[in-house]
Length: 264
Image (cartoon, rainbow, N blue to C red; front, side):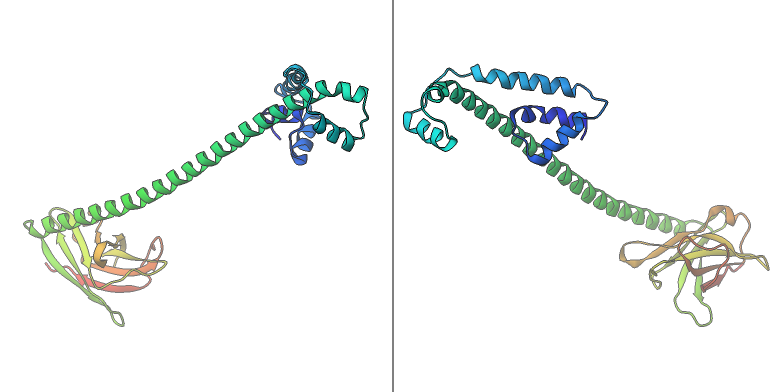
């Protein structure tokens, strides 16, 4: 139990209104060495409780009521009966205090529950908004890629290169290449996403090892697009290729599906 928790329960401890588990926890907390005003808070609560005896004017309960209480408690007549008004007032005041404290505690608990529910709802709303925002961004990104592809296709000096399947593989892709602008995009509607895999792009020159050149990304409608890294187009490649690789890509192609030679 923390000091903050004890301070919240101190009035209930002084009134004897705690559950057994809470009372044991409070008593164990008081035996600890360091506190932030816990013993003092309990002393103040006890002083307030002790003053409750005078909080209500002494009123004798109806005779039948007192006789029933006295009978159950084994109290006879005489002094016990005469002392009843003061005890009755103290008990009534204490009962009122306990009821008020428990009511306030219940209200605070309900406020915390409502606040927690509101936070959960806000979190759910935030997650839903974030997911929707992600979808919108994906749509905007796909639209921007298609705009760039259209502009590249119409640019002077651009040409289209077909990428066909290598032996034993299937599929096709198209590359739009403009070496003067150092731009090249690969587009395919014949490939599909593969769980735990990525479609990786490659640039080939002569007998040199293939160079990783980017990845295909799948957008709305299943269209896969990917841009060749512009720096790799400073010198004209001999060919482009597409391979299927483990997530994250590979340093060298392990499963080539498509390839196409750049003419001229």
